[in-house]
Length: 94
Image 1: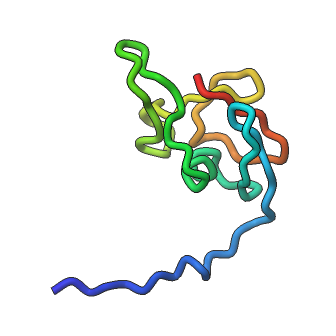
Image 2: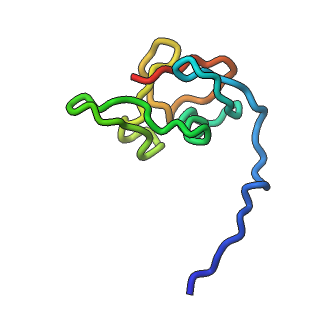
């Protein structure tokens, strides 16, 4: 028998909410959380296109091993799981 665990999402204490920009759209995030977490909470799952077939790619491991979450942040190509959200961050899909 499976024991259901209550939803404790309302107990999560988040840092101050800030805004950042993804492909020209202003999105909310919590200062200091990873960019991949903020993008996923905002419903953004398509971060780049695969180089060989153009298929959409997004976050996979969320810890910097797979390089699937590559985006352009302030002009540099980085992994979204290794960048923290700061106010006004400029992020673009590859």
